[in-house]
Image (cartoon, rainbow, N blue to C red; front, side, top):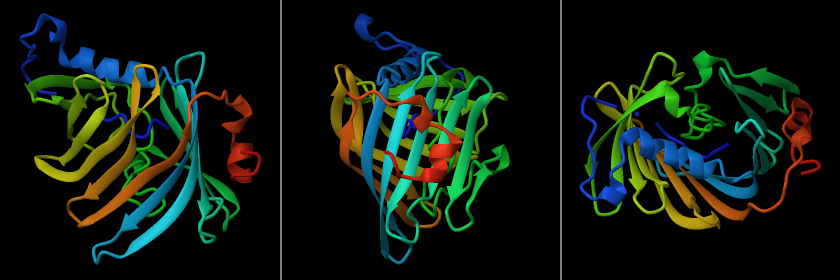
Length: 256
């Protein structure tokens, strides 16, 4: 799961004045995607804090495994390890040529549930991240416009084509000009911002690839937010293919 490759456009392609930075919006967005796929495998422990409208916080722990295959497609497995009432709940995401295949395992029901396209906009485990947010984004399924630059970021306006499977009408991305990492994302329903993502505490996980250590997703409409904090991350150990299977999804953290 590439916690968070977000996507796309408008009418005018804008180029920066400096020849070294004279890139189109598509080139910038492609470079973000390319760099993240250089991380061939990763194991991370994450703390999730869900803050509701009254400021009450629920804290959860989860384990995240990601791997990029020989076909340059991503597969990921996230499993909750605490507290007891959600332990073993997991999500398997496999990127395919036709889009993501996602399967959810609920230990209480002892069954695997496929996440259909119509359900990808639903909240994952009660958080403010949807199943779509936790999947992949194909840059070719979006159009993008670079309409502004700031001291720290390229600002892209990205919009889905008919090929995109998304609940968002538009996403405005702030991308670090040096690291090509996503700093912020505003998600739109029509002309209204419904969610905001903010990233911080960046770490160079392999040479030239930076990933956030803290992600905050705010539900603007409902006054909620979910904070993901990476408490450990290992990007140097190869992961077996059999960890990204329905069988392992049902086993939870056993063997991980």
